[in-house]
Image (cartoon, rainbow, N blue to C red):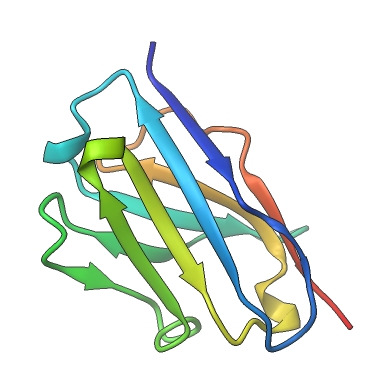
Length: 114
């Protein structure tokens, strides 16, 4: 069945880095654009990174531009999110999904705190 499994979250101090992974199954991964989203407590879900199906194009909102990098490995059906220079406001549950959206996975928690 269709599944998205996120991992790699954790607790880190401001300025630190984390690398999130999302393994996809149940659909043809290499023809789909993929995205990372996040949702902080009491807030709506926010798109933080987008990568095209062929990996040529990436897009980020200003809030993470220059700090986050999305990438993909089609051989592993995996999309990654490298997060650098983390800030307390990056604290959230992080989810991946494809375009068009599927049911959401369980997400992975990122906490940035001193």
